[in-house]
Image (cartoon, rainbow, N blue to C red; front, side, top):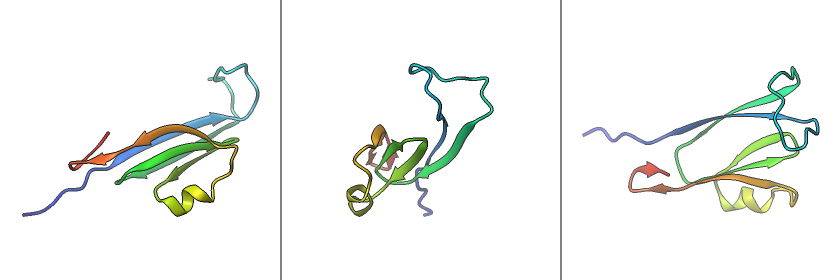
Amino acid sequence: MKKHSTMVSVEAVTWSRESYGLFDYESQHVSRRNLKASSSAKIIRIKNDIRLVTDMYNERNVCENSKTLALLKHQDGMIC
């Protein structure tokens, strides 16, 4: 029997300019990242960079100024 793994694909779009917390949909200066996770992970933002942290080693080496955007939890073959 073939075992299928669950994968989550995330497209993150950020804008580096200050806009009072609003995203400027007309800006040409955006940063796009495509992230894929097949296990528990944390999606974080450091300035204008989005990163996927999948293990404790990487998490300890992350800048203190990071902001957690999402937590992905792998449980019973699903990612929530």
